[in-house]
Length: 239
Ligand code: ASP
Ligand code: MG
Image 1 (cartoon, rainbow, N blue to C red):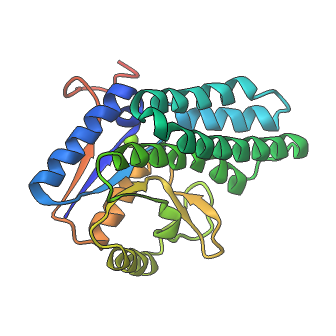
Image 2 (cartoon, rainbow, N blue to C red):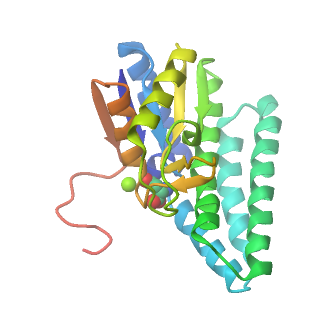
């Protein structure tokens, strides 16, 4: 079994989602269903963070929320067949409403705990993974969206949680035993503590999610896909 992890740029546009799905289909026809780990759409984690910061400072966040919604809705309109769009738009709208309520809570209390911050950030991976798995499901009925909060258990160090490896390995084994023959799309970056509260694995943590799954499933390979023009000799954000 292979683990394929796709970062933010690989789920960040209509074109790159098409490419991602082509790669998953190619892998499926060669070696069976891979396990797919996804990040939030590019820039979305930062956007969520800045919304949370605006909220705690008592500033508005509706413009950013609109941006977030429209980035996801654009993908639905381009990649989901017309008659299947309603359920996915409704589910996304419900998630965005939940997020808005959370942010309103932060605004009224003028308080942003690390716990709440993790919950807010989790919407990035939850939305991207739901969306991409739904698109995949049109062609591959075995496609399944899995929230890693069900699979990866951590301590309660919100923001940079530490994984309980034994417990996590047991959960992952059980899950794949109960769900054989599925094409699982799994949220990167997020996990949960013993009380079921959402935690995160630190920025860029989706690579770590892929490694945790690869180790637990004894994967033959873990592929970390990214969307760049070539090999860079320096960080392109700096140089
Ligand atoms: N979305 C998270 C981040 O931007 C995790 C990841 O992309 O790996 O840090
Ligand atoms: Mg990364």
